[in-house]
Every structure is written in C-alpha cells, then in structure tokens.
Image (spheres, rainbow, N blue to C red):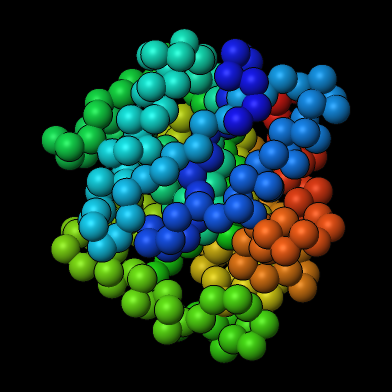
Length: 257
C-alpha cells in the first residue's frame, strides 16, 4: 500500500486475537491515514504483516514474523529505522510492543531473527492494545454492555495463543520490570483507547507506566468509543471518529519531525 519507493514507512500489524485475519476495515483505515498524510505532502509506504494464525501457529511464531518484516524493511528495502513507524491494533498492538521489546533485548529464541538497529524507530502507534489477558479489571464489568468484545471470548483466545508458551514480558507486557520501557528503541509512542472498552483499565494502567519511563508518549483516551472502533467504523462505511483524527494528527506530526 502507499508508495513502495517512499523513504517513510508504516509497518502494520493487524489485530484479530491472533486467530482472525485482517479485515477490510484494517485496509480502509490505513488507506485513509496515508491519504491524510499525502495531503500534507508526506509520501508514505505501508507493509502489512499477514502473520500465521492460531491454532495452526503458536506463539512466538508471530513475533518471529514481526521481527522478520522489520528486518526485511531495513536490510532488503533499505529503509532507515528512523523513517519507520510500527502500527497495530488490539493483538497487533500487542505484537508491536513485543517486537520493540525484542529489539531492546536482542535474542530471545532460536526461531526469531537477530536484529540490531543502528538507530531508533521513528514511532509506534498502538490502538486498543491487548496487553493484559486477565478479565478481572473493573472495566470488564462497567463496559460489558458497551464493547464489541467480551471477557469470555478474550479468555478463550488467550488460552489458545499462549497455552504452551512461557509467560514473560513479551507475552505479557504488564510483567516488564521497572525501567524497561525507557529502553525501547523508538522515539515516540501513541497509545489509543476507547472509554467504552472492557480493556480500558488494563490499557490505561500500562500506558501510564510506559509514559512514566519513556520521554515521548501520547495517551489518547476517547469517551464513548469501543475496542478498536476506527476499524469498525471504516468497515461499516461510517465517518471517521475522534480517535481516527487523533491517530492521523499524531502520524502527521511524527513523520514531519
């Protein structure tokens, strides 16, 4: 998508609980964002990761594929890390955080490529990140009738994904030690969450931890929006909402720096 010859690049990790492929709304969202950037004379290319899905592929295969795509963009396409933004929604945002953590530490698993960056990535845009797999937060009760996802479905998806995996800061970002987030090889971070999400409490909790350690973090909390609502809006042909506008503004500002 976009201009494959552009210096600046978005690498997109679509959500879907690691078991649902990218939806038309994902592509419509990214197309709208790149169109908005083009209006500001920002020439952007986009790589979409079609990672393998559960149950046919277990973690950390998706992490290996995410790192491999970043490596491909840098070593084969010749993109500078400082011109790359990682973007993802829901489980895709979880994957983006895992990739950043992996790039911080260097080598986790024999199946995952070793990649050392010469400079930081330009940014990471995380929409409704699925980063805590418990379902006991208060927002699961207060937003149960407002969101498009439920505690029951999230629990089943998490069990299917991580049943054979060791729990660590890659699978569960909330387990990261104090000081971890200041080490991430990325200049700017956007974390978007809707006020009607069942994941609201867990996202806000981790977002504040990251903001306390990383020098440039924007938390965009939009009232009356549910989980990854911009994607659903585009999928239904609805006009972009407040979170979309916040994402577009942040991307424009970040690529203009």
